Amino acid sequence: MKMWIFAVLAALAVGASAQNCPSTCETMKWGTCDGPPCSCYLLVDNGVKQPINCTALVPKCFLMKAEMYRARKGMNTRSIAGKPDETAIVDNDGIYDPECESDGKFKAKQCNGTDVCWCVNSAGVRRTDKGDQNLKCEKLVETHWVRLQLTHKQGPATVDKDKLKTAISTELNKRYQMNPSLVKEIQYDPDARMIVVDVNKGKGDRSYDLSKMAYYMEKDVKILPLFNDQSRRFTPSVDGQTLEMENIVVYYVDEEAPTITMKHLTGGIIAVIVVVVLAVVAGLLAVFFVQKRQRKYKKTQQREMEQM
Ligand SMILES: *[C@@H]1O[C@H](CO)[C@@H](O)[C@H](O)[C@H]1NC(C)=O
Ligand SMILES: *[C@@H]1O[C@H](CO)[C@@H](O)[C@H](O)[C@H]1NC(C)=O
Image 1 (cartoon, rainbow, N blue to C red):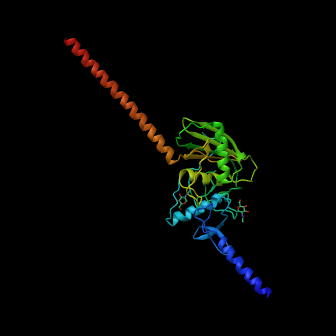
Image 2 (image 1 turned 45 degrees about the vertical axis):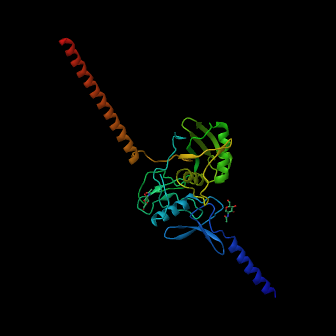
Image 3 (image 1 turned 90 degrees about the horizontal axis):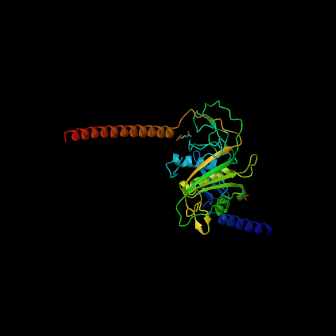
């Protein structure tokens, strides 16, 4: 009799847990959940299931792996590319297939499946020059400060700077589960519609991973939300007015200065330099021809005057 009751209870429990298993993953649109026992995962590498927690932001390292998986499979990913500190770095390298620790942290040394390796910070951003496989990365250096340089779209009314700080802290908390007290400073230029947000947890603090917040936010602003709900984005609200963002640049400041050298100019910078040089040359030529024509004009005028 007892056995029988246990069996019924067990069956009920299995049924209940199957029902409780959501079909979608709240914090990751590419996540899948199934069971029992209910578990949610992302597909990475060659179809390996990486378990994730769909009630918390997913570590950036897992997100990048999932993005690389989808890119390899030809699935839709849509991916992209005033410093807060002398040592701040921007992620110019873009996406690679990272090696993650089991808890989702980046391994300090990354090689993208090739012989070329480099060291990254806790946001997975390269902080050394590239080297070969013998490169040593002693430890993962923590990014303790990120500067979010946002541009918002034109709204109907001007925005009050003091209220902006509260609005942004509140939205960062609601959307990215971030402690609002980490927002240390906000600068605002209404003419440029630029908001500069400094999120700084101080050196030594490991309680919140700034890279998750920055990555989710970058996607929210530049591409599409990583959340399952595609209808909302990062939209702080000031005095009932919702601010929509149109661009973001993220600067990363690490607890130790990066050792990256500037000797390799990136293609983008070289292109800009070439364009500027061409523009200057074109300008000089234009001035030269105008002057020459004016001189000719003056001469003919003089000649006509003399004839008269
Ligand atoms: C998932 O994340 C939530 C929110 O951060 C946390 O409360 C919960 O303990 C996590 N679950 C697991 C299994 O780690
Ligand atoms: C990593 O490798 C992929 C393809 O193998 C490539 O598309 C990508 O640009 C590489 N990323 C970096 C940062 O080297």
